Length: 152
Picture 1 (cartoon, rainbow, N blue to C red):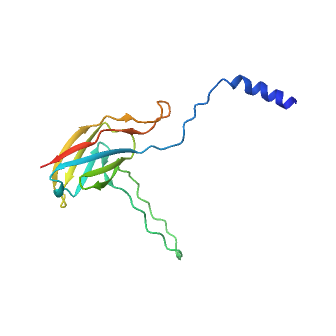
Picture 2 (cartoon, rainbow, N blue to C red):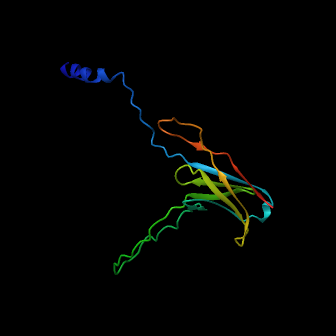
Picture 3 (cartoon, rainbow, N blue to C red):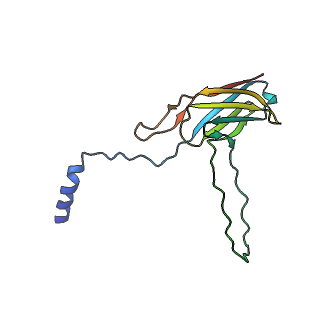
């Protein structure tokens, strides 16, 4: 009975307090680019900001061999990994979707490219991000209106 009384003394004063814990969820921010006009000429779309330019979304690596024999160990220096600010893929004939790697970029430059790399169209866009879920305290998913890129 003494343990319950001691527990009540410790717990009761804090019973009116609420714990504000945020879920450990990473929200994906996406940016959509819609191509208008000469869609057939577009082979790729690139999105850039001051941190760099987009790259294709990573694909699964080939599995390592089940057995390998190391006869001599000589560590090789590993290259420093740099992460692009955007990973993108073609969603359909005239739409590309880019995952934003970090932050909410305020401005991007979007390029439509031909198969040989020629820039067909290029525009800068200011982005306005709007929270579409979550809370101000914990954050949540955000979205920005699609970018319309006109290709002559």
